[in-house]
Amino acid sequence: MEKTSDFYIVDKRVLPEVFTKVVTAKQLMLSDEKLTVAEAVAKVGISRSAFYKYKDHVSCLGESKMGRIMTVACDLRDEAGLLSCVLNIIASHGVNILTINQTIPINGIANVTITVDTGNGVDITELIEKLKNTDGVLTLKIIARE
Image (cartoon, rainbow, N blue to C red; front, top):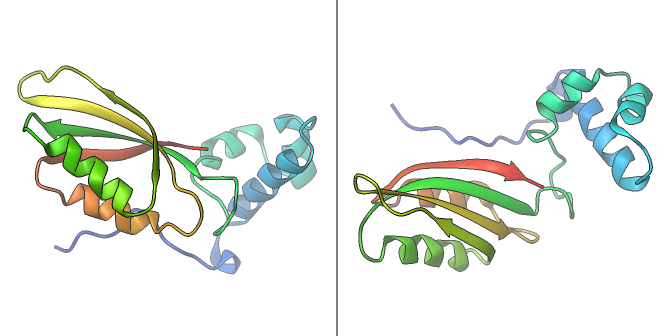
């Protein structure tokens, strides 16, 4: 069975209304730094729990500030040069690496957390797929986007 992407582009007209309201609430808070989550969700008509459930997973395509900083966690086999290969793939996509944290390998597996600034115009889906398909990358997951 062919593996599908974790990311999709969907016309907002077919999305449940809660998704567009979450995006609107996030935009309200960006435009008015004094606005609290409670105030923003009240203005758009959703609950705080709905906002928190979806806020890290829904954003507008091309938002310049939102979603630029991304943290990925991956498990890598303990092989010479594998981390360097992963970092080269990231750099080849024009992504700026901000931090790298690696654990001491246990049972031949090292956990690595990498935070990057994706900038504008980077195809994150292509980058993530390339990293996931790299020999020696056992798992890869986006754990944060800011």
